[in-house]
Image (cartoon, rainbow, N blue to C red; front, side, top):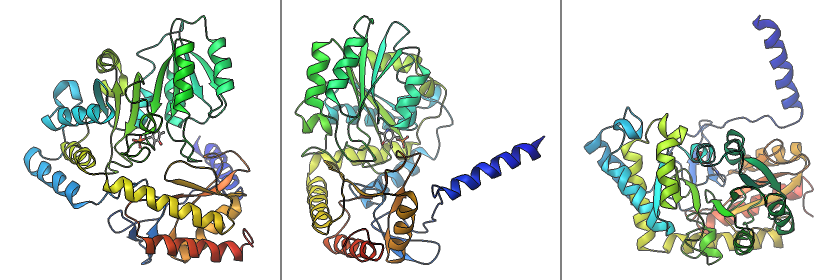
Amino acid sequence: MYSRFQQFLKTELDSIREAGTYKDERVIVSPQYSEIHLDSGKEVLNFCANNYLGLSNHPALTEAAANALDERGYGMSSVRFICGTTDYHKELENKISKFFGTEDTILYAACFDANGGLFEPLLSSEDAIISDALNHASIIDGVRLSKAQRFRYANADMEDLEKQLIAAKDCRFRMIVTDGVFSMDGNVAPMDKIFALAEKYDAMVIIDESHSAGVVGRTGRGVTELFNCIGRAEVITGTLGKAFGGAIGGFTTGKKEIIEMLRQRSRPYLFSNSIPPLVAAAGVKAFSMIDETNELQDRLHENTEYFIKQMIDAGFDIKPTESAICAVMLYDAKLAGIMADRLLEEGIYVIGFSFPVVPRDQARIRVQISAAHTREHLDKAINAFIKIGKDLKVIQ
Ligand SMILES: *Cc1c(COP(=O)(O)O)cnc(C)c1O
């Protein structure tokens, strides 16, 4: 039986390779940071991690994790409601609520699970979910798992959102769901306008702050800070896997009855393991550090501004961005792959993104800036982009 299926898969895989969209994995043999070592022996500067605040290898977090490892051991061997909750899990949930100005928080093994388990327990076929077309895959899957009626609006397009709200006006409940920062372009959701429409059409607002929390807004509270609407969203989801240490874990934070219902009914919460205590402890430390000082956000914002200005001045086609994501547009998938490989040879680790991660003919290199990058790192990357960009005739 397998031989026919095997042939089918081999043909499919070949066509992925042919299209230039095959994804290889490079192996890192050092801690995750701005300077990393690959198994090839190469030392490179990392410009493709979600390590926005440089916390993935921060001594304060590794120390907190090591202490928790000593005090609480390695694994929980349980889901939360059976015997998978430690004091660290509860403390982290409280920290996250305080950070976002919300009422309560529930942890998940990942934000993919937070989004996957969000809609199904809350909404039924009488209800409507109105979702941005560029929302993260985990939101799309979460919406699919619910029985609610689905409405989709073009990315950050408020006219279209209003149209969809009108189309959904006879539904019992309406939820607008949007990423805070869209991960492939780096643009933000216009939260002021979204809240205005939500009010007009009696809809709730769900924001996924995975790429924006820790990053966007003066103190890193995300798009609700940027648009001066902290505490207004019914629900915020986010990840511990990006700015807040980059290990693993997700969360849903918001109105207390919603969180309470998720603890009773959300399937990835009820049927999947707790995050390890050491991850929860390091998470507590990350949120404490961000509470105490704005140093990391300030540096991240300065670095991002500098990098983008230099790249635009050099003639690159950069998507308008309000985050630490800088999409260098190349449009052609093969070119994006070749350029990323050439940049790696120059010691700059970036990745070409192509279909199905971005639409066809929208291939790009996505650069992610970190507070851990020094001015020297940024200059080295900019100079490498200019050199290879000229070689490949991307710029003049
Ligand atoms: C990264 C990301 C996720 C997934 O987060 P994990 O914790 O890694 O599962 C979900 N939503 C958005 C918008 C993301 O960028």
